[in-house]
Length: 105
Image (cartoon, rainbow, N blue to C red; front, side, top):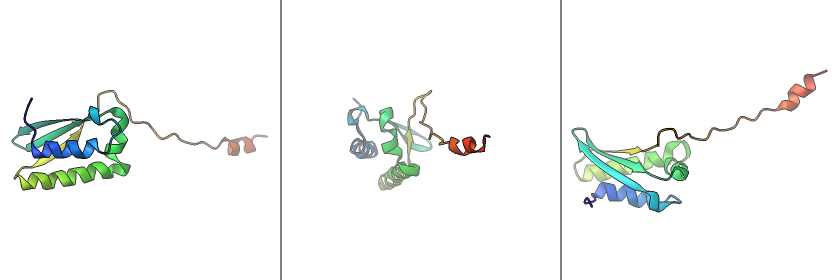
């Protein structure tokens, strides 16, 4: 098993404590000339918890991760993996048909 790095352990710790399926949390770490990329794999049902309202939770995790990276002189980015073909549930539009019925003669 590959050694875990501070940034990778940090993301795992945070995410496992906010999702409903902590055993499904997996973080892959890759390094290239751009810096460190952490790819977060989670259960599809937990996507809302990790992203948060208007993306605030994900943004906060990324901000804290940048601080952890700066401490280790590394540029760290987080990618939340979304399987191909997965769909985010759409908000259903509520159509008031009573107004249309009132117009009928």
